[in-house]
Length: 268
Image 1 (cartoon, one colour):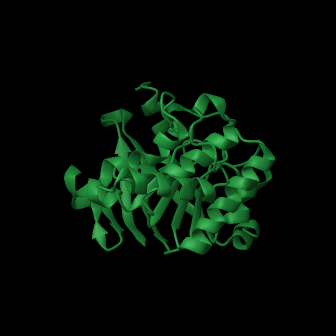
Image 2: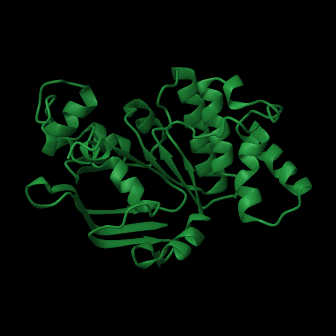
C-alpha cells in the first residue's frame, strides 16, 4: 500500500543544520499493522508527517496506492488524503460539537450524502468502536479512552484504505489501551485497513504489529515481526526494550540529538 524509498530530511542551515531522517526506506503492506518505535527525537513523527504529506522530503520517493505524493501539489495531495484517516495523539475532537457532529464532519465535508444517510453511517461507526448511544454527548463529558474511540470512529468515517495512528495509547489506562489495540487489530483483519502506528508503548506494539520498525537518529536499526525485534542482538534495541537508562541511547541529549523536537520548540 505504501512504499518509501530513501527519504531524507534535514532542518536548519549551516552549522545548525540537523539531519532528522537519513535514507529511510520501508514498505507498509496492505491490510497489515506496522508500528514505528524509537526514543524521543528518533524521527518517528517526522516519518508520519511525510506519509500524510505535511512534509516534503529533501530527497527520495513516497508511493501511496501507486501514486508518488512527493511530486504532488496541495490539491492533488488532498485527493490522496481522502484515502486515509488519522487518529491524533490528543484525539483532536472539536469540544463545541457533539460526538455525532465530530464523527459526521468528514462525511459532510467530502461527500454529498443526504443527512439521513450520514446519520446512519455515524451510528455504524460508533457501533464499531462500542459507543453507540453517545451521539449527543460533548467531548468534555467523555473519558480519555472514550475520546480516543470517538476519534477513531471519525478517522474511519470515510472507509479509508489507510489509518495513521499517532501515539494511540498515550495517557490511557491498561484496559483502555487493550480496547484500542483490539479495535486496531479488528480494523486490519476484518476491513483490510493498512495501519501505521507511531508509538512509545512497546507492549502494545508487540501485541498488535505484523511488523515493527525501530528508528535511531533517523535511521532504521531494526525491522521485523515482534519476535524478531524481541530477539534482536543490537544493544540499542535491547536498551529500548528493557527500558534501561544506561546504554548507547543517551539519557542526556544535546541540541543536535533532539533534532526535530527542538525545531518544533523554536530553540534554533
